[in-house]
Image (cartoon, rainbow, N blue to C red; front, side):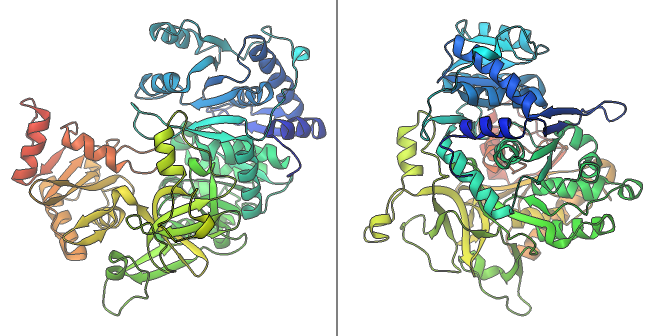
Length: 594
């Protein structure tokens, strides 16, 4: 698998070698009567050649090509067409499926210097109108689900090197300042090899997933890795999964899926929404790797899912906690195949001081789930201030080196020096002192396992203590069944001192009592369990908390929206000083609700 210089060479070889084999099976959103779409390697190759021929004929070879598609095989054909042409694919969310409409993709369009847009016939008119409104009349827009726009026989294999870019992976950050990770063919091949080593995949492996195709795990894990190993994948849309979570699980037994996963919330959703009648129809015995790439991974989720779906044949050793990010292409670490996830119980007070130590009797404790072990990277845990390496069992920023690490963000030279070429302090590391990726994640190495504890920028420093927001959020969400897991954000704001703020979604129909009592109970629980005052609690409607495409809470964004008065609470309790800074930012139109 390592003999290929580029991913383009690899896919061309796979297409010739396995032409009649299914590469992908896509399950339409309509579960009643819709026929699954089968895409063979030969079919993928033929359509990719036609798309590549058009890109080459229209001067887009080597340029950035924006992909705007609903979930389906048209996206896969277009992405492969970009690989074939030597173009740089730029996957992005389809604006008509996003609440923010064209705001995010307009930023990507400008930042990536796009020379062409590929989409389908249903969306082409609106996208063409959007391009015109943005003043990009020179950017061609092609609906690739037709057949008469190019001749597949006119395609020519490009002369590419491992350093050529394969695609730009835009991260889920601020919509006004998108950052595109530059993923080269070398990076992509290296990370697919890392996934292969960690998950033990081969040509008989069948993936099954629902993640957005423009998301790194959905793209690299569920689409490109099957091509890398010459395997196959059964895919459905995120909308289909969110409406009917059991469809994902049902497809595992129906098609013999062996590997696939998603964020922590996906497993929680299955536990809550799959009925006993649906459970009786499931067969999860073939599922040997259920990837969970959340940070942090919840022990409660692993145990609840395992217990709920054991009658369907799900095995506890099938859980595959892992860690990675777009900046490393995807995977950094993973749990060895066939081994149960490692859980480390530690003293809560020691964790606040930055060490993993065994718990003390009758004292608060925390449970951390390991994100696995590291094979294809060098990882150090570094003090983010002194830039010196921390000893084993100590918490610091996770720094990474390896062939999978991208060269940087598109057109961000100054940021790239800071993030992708970090140096250890003088005298530390010798020749290896430079060239490190600063992940921005906090974690520790202990007994060969990587434990991710949180985000550096989201760490709450409160009265000299280091608090992780997810610990506070977990305490809040255990208060009442009306408070959904993973549906809150905790952060601090500053006046003359630090103030803790809790924003939590609530299902009003499930509240046992009134909202005032619920808010007071939340404050009491935080005080009792964590010994910190929680003077500011906002109870909000479901859907208020912003998340990335991988389900991570966007706490920094929620803090910004809170300070700008953009949150509309069902009920709130605010300290006077906090209410004043919100009112000053929002102006006289701010409504006072409590």
